[in-house]
Amino acid sequence: MDAQEVDTLKAMMEWEGRRTAPPQGFPSLPDMPAARYTSPDYFALEREHIFRKSWLFAGHIDEIPEPGCHVRWENAGEPLIIVHGMDGVVRAFYNTCRHRGAPVVTAERGKSSRLMCAYHHWTYKTDGSLAGIPEQRDFIDFDPSCRGLIAVRCEMFGNCIFVNFDDEAMSLRDWLGPLADEWAAFGFDRVRLAARHSFELNCNWKVAMEANMEVYHVPFIHPNTVAPLVDSRRNFNSFYANGHARMLAPAPPSTDREHVRAIESPPEWQSIDTVGELGRTCTQSYTLFPNWVSPLSNFFIPPLIFWPTSLTTTRLELITMALDWGDGPVPDLWTVPDATSPNGRQMSPIILEDTQFGEAIQKSMASRAFKSVPLSYQEARIYSFHQQCDRMIGIDNVPPDLRIEQVLGTEWRAPTDPRVAQMHSEASAPAQQLAS
Image 1: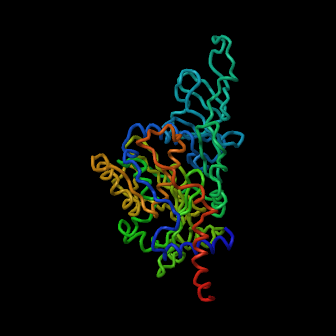
Image 2: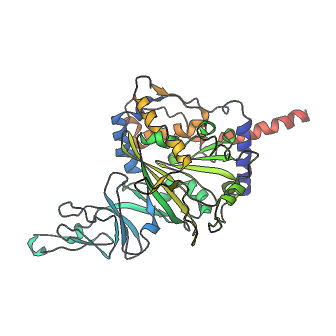
């Protein structure tokens, strides 16, 4: 961000703190149908369209660091292999042999110059092409060039690996849009994978995710953890194409956020020196549609990824990426040691606070009393997210009783956000009055 944009965003945060009502012209957000969280039909539409047409975070290059390394990946409900090819290219394939459908790879991860199905030893190169089969003489009119592994779109942003099941989807760079430029300062091409842990939640994936898409709850749920570091009244939300969004909030006036981060970080942890003022001093959190939420700072890239496993269950991935920490303690922003847990880790206090009501909320949503969801201006990131859900599904494919109105138009997207002009207009009004 250039200096002018930083100054504008700082002014917008102060403007948010002073306002006494939603901005002029900001649309009233109609109630959302309750069944968007409880309907099997809507859940099926999400799985079929949203998670098969969006770019999804699959991993980090550290998980397949060398040519020949591969890892199984099934978070989106399809069996895939992510492969670091012998030619250096990272690719994704369905983990399905072209013979009789057996998995080509059964181990969680491995390294080999060939991928061999254990069932009949059909063997594939790391570019997916079929390298050989036993007893090929017994196959009539067999063309090996037509029997390679089925590829899935796979692209990288820095060291992060993304996949997309839609062959016609836009490129990852186009999907990210302005986020790619804003994220350039955070060292995505330099950070290592420090921690990646999964936890099962008993609620719809949107219930879990939306707890991280607004700060309306911060004073009540996080009084001793987040609230001392985030001034929720000065929070400024920005909206982008493709359902992405950004939340920017300063620390309370009495808190030096940059100083707190520095004293909480062991000396072995490197600061990302390219991060600008806002990333150092504010809480800067992004929603990457459909299921990534992450604050970005001068120490961490720590995404929370929400994977629907059923209508009422979610797998939450808690990830920490950071610059090389040498021989120091491994950075892990979201989990803490727990000897009683199956993987030896437990969610950190902040994540436990955000997830504590998920199961109870889901049960309550199943009651006849849950009819609709009214959202405030400060929760508009959630409404924008739901608008994109319907657009990805296809608005005409969404049953009318489950559909939401597309009231938050493109005119509210950054960088042509009318709230900026409104803020400047209000700032100049006192000066004009004094001059008259």
